[in-house]
Image 1 (cartoon, rainbow, N blue to C red):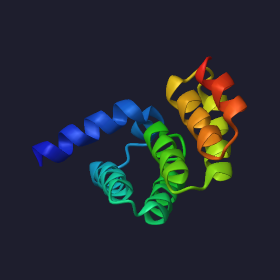
Image 2: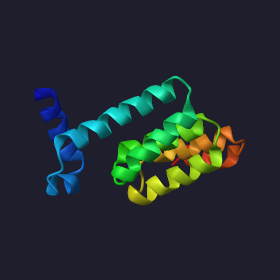
Image 3: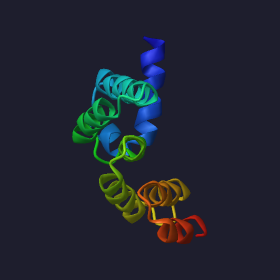
Length: 124
């Protein structure tokens, strides 16, 4: 139970809106487990499954940056460059100047063959 309590505390710091609703620690643990599983799927190159799991997490916690970023990464690694670029642009709306999102958007441009745009993005 200590592990769950620590996880709940961490997630409450990441999701202060959820903390205000006094959501049970088990719900936070479920989100953390799903995020971990989605990362494992992406590492195993099962990108469509990873994206689907990230989508489930985002339905429960749409403000969760790590899930949005992981989803965008799984999209780009899976060759879905247009969808990845859109996801990275949405991240940049939430956090303008985010290095992670800019690099991801540049990677999507590069891998899709838009080298000029990639170079512009990589130089920002």
